[in-house]
Length: 340
Image 1 (cartoon, helix red, strand yellow):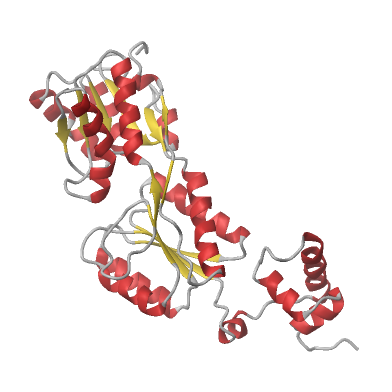
Image 2: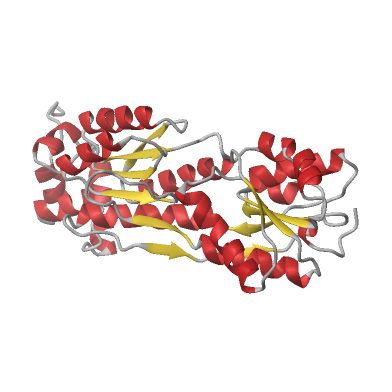
């Protein structure tokens, strides 16, 4: 008669002819375990019908295997792709992801952090909201949990969270140099809320390169949305009729500008050169295709997940600040020879 007893780690160890500690390492997805041993343990689990008891694991101090992923704006396709990449990469490390959208509201962010702490997450990856939302970060510090700040940098009111982001300054310089090579010098920078750290970062390469050549700068700040990009076109034409090209804060602003230009009878790449930032999928699908600064979001998400996993595995260690390289994608909207 078959036993109703639930299989234990001890049963799995005996079946696989390994120690209990080796089984535990496999459950933690530790790189210390050889491939052959991992396969033997996995086969033993399958044969016995072993299911890990997460609640018991929590009581033993190993955590729930959950990671909190908090995003400032999941409506933006760039952040949606980033969240997907992180979630898939964490799954490969044996971790599940709880994803939350804070809709650029720091109060929602703080409440979300506290809620995730109550559910005993093992760590956080946060693309933070701007504003007075330090309570949540202080709670993370008190809980002594690994946390990684990505893509944006804010004052946390606690010990600084390590930042992992892209080399936005280089991207801005690349975009300016590309447009100058097309024979234009009157270049505007459009989009991004004035005074925010991320706006300053994405604009810094533009300002540096233009100032180094003693070229005039034109900056029109505003929300990082498609609607703003479209609505700003009449103002751009009125206030800066001399403008020959624009570098946008992100692809959403650039796509809005793209539509607004077409509405005024101007074809991007023929009558006005246009470069975005991020390289979301629609950038290559719109016509004429949008030139942009590519931030490899899929690779970035996977690396962010690996950094947090290493912090969880090796408590007390901090991820080093790092800027991932970007590249310019010179599509038709940013190339003077493009046909409308």
